[in-house]
Image 1 (cartoon, helix red, strand yellow):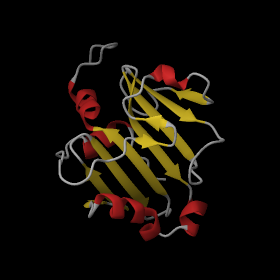
Image 2 (cartoon, rainbow, N blue to C red):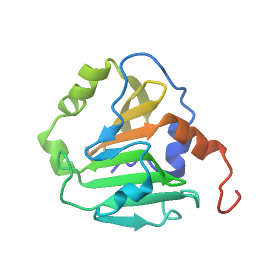
Image 3 (cartoon, rainbow, N blue to C red):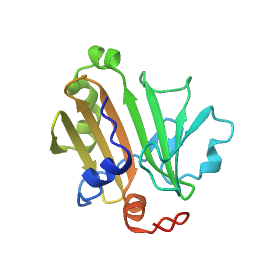
Length: 171
């Protein structure tokens, strides 16, 4: 499955310029909103994943939200926090979902709402993204598996993750 996360994600998408054209991108996915504090997870069924496994920094945290309550038949919903602030929401849709919904159907709402996407060519995948200068929305399809992902990113926080020294390890 294509999962645009960890160090590879920063390398691929941290270097993209931000754009401020078009409509404002919705910063929410279900009940989660970019910029919220990690304390908002209280009462949620989540598992904290070790940041070292995903190549994240020591001051990043990743939580996987457990069912129920996932919109649109999501297989995995990951929430990434930097210094306690939600900066990335990554929804991964399994192959059985992708077999029911075409790529055009999966991207239709975003294309209608936000206009023509920027198309990114990556080996083995297709990625559409929109950026309003504050928030990025990425829709991706893994061509080998056919699986989809939907990722929301806070541009400013992504920049900070890539540029600021790690507050815990100092790297």
